[in-house]
Image (cartoon, rainbow, N blue to C red; front, side, top):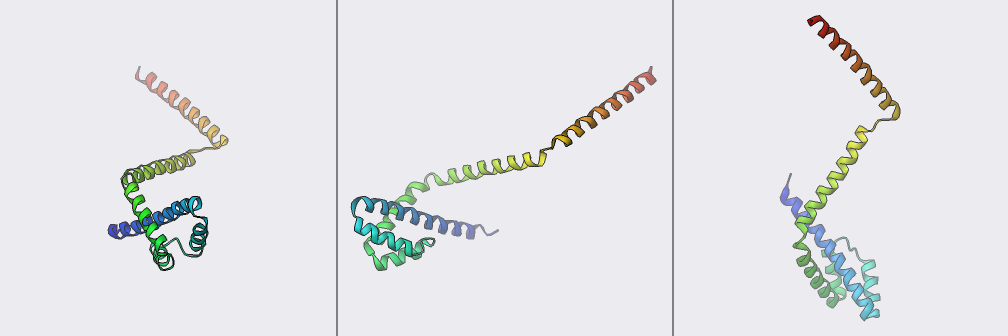
Length: 143
């Protein structure tokens, strides 16, 4: 397991996601303050691949440099704000999710149909009565 590679890939995914969130934030701001630029930027964001944040910003800087700088500023701010909570939230979220999945799997593995449950109860009572008679025979033999 290459933990450095996993960390690098995770960072790239988070960076792209924060770029996406920055685009949503700026679009929301532009909708309120500058509708013509909102429409231009929205069209650009729909046309370009936002899945790769770095490629998106490169293309944005070529076409709309001021928006590119704004997206980088907002993305940086989001990263600073989120980084404080992320490690604990990520670990906690994964642990809670895993507990839920394990619980469902255990329930699935231990569920019995009513016939299986009845057969199990009958088998237990037969075994118990046979155990009781064997125990009684042993007690009588000892006397």
